[in-house]
Length: 503
Image 1 (spheres, helix red, strand yellow):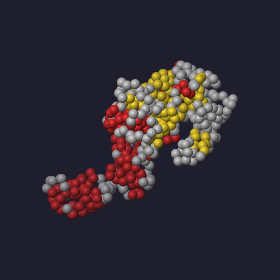
Image 2 (tube, helix red, strand yellow):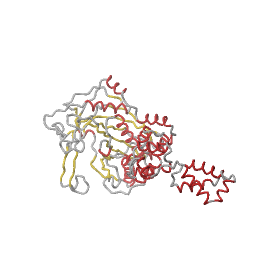
Image 3 (cartoon, one colour):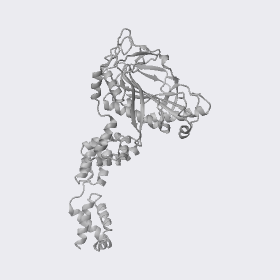
Image 4 (cartoon, helix red, strand yellow):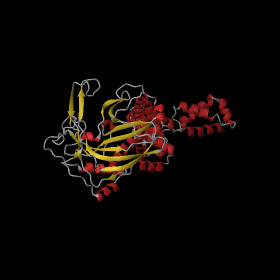
């Protein structure tokens, strides 16, 4: 039934009638200099099959050696996820045939992971938190990369031939496996996205990986099942493989909820299988029937000795952990004086680092938030890009605010300067000079414009002389128009009242 085309059930209707249960396996490539079990360098974008050794290629007689830095990075991750660190663990052989695994087995950890029994609190968009329990975090090696040539899908079906690049084979990974995530209800897609995003932020903070999802440094396998009620036994799950963006994680969960509800409504059964995510259509398609652990015939890796992390070393790593993202957000909110809703908007916009750098460039916290969450956020939304992708830097925002603070431009002119910087006309100072946007600070030209405005509107001048200051705004507006917005409105008001008082 899983391979049949079904009409999707509306998402809201599906979660009203079924209880979704989530499970996520996140793989993170560790940013070590060399691979997990040999001295081949980690590379990206190099010529195929140039970053390999006999171990990477699984040649007979080639013996692995564990990368000590990878073990340290795995412990860092485990500690950051509140896991227990094993006093003794070992590697195992996970046996299966894939052309991108030249040994015909993957060296992984099975019954003795390096980290286990952890948890992490993830913050949702409304500021609430949701606790995700971690079953295990274990070390393993990545596979190579298959490229299927010919055909229309880029997959092996319909391809004319396939190429294999072993540069990635053997790169160290940590796989983090959750326990079943229950109780999320209709918010299950949001919880999935927030969890993966939280892990990505932790990886970067720990310095264990570049964690660039577009490069596959972080990949998520999304498991989902439905059951009639929260009290019912767990349903049969599907595993959507290698989802590599936050948005796709969220969309994949929503799709599987709607699809599985449709299958069950039609009287079908869910097949335990892997599924492929299609970004273009926002849908999943069947892959292969999902194997259980016994199908992989795990047995201890005979060529590697067990790992027994010294307890003192583990505590040294714990003591050296950097401030984690959630604690950092709380600290920065206090330092910046943002209200909860303001900080939540900053977090949801991915603007924390941008604002922090803008403040470091000299802007006040209020000014930094005003620019990034105002004009720039609107521009990013219009262009459908992330804030950080806009062609402007925090340093330039700091320079822009410095021009405002110095009185050389006002807020209205600053928006024109911002427009020029985004258009590639140079930095704020260059745009001010090139466009002639500096505030008119000489009273002479201002008085000329004021006299012209008063002469052109004698009735308003008379009202002001009689003590009615309401119409002053009309004169100020005329002066601002005459000076192309380059006058200081406060100074114009002072001069208008002086002029009227003089008769």
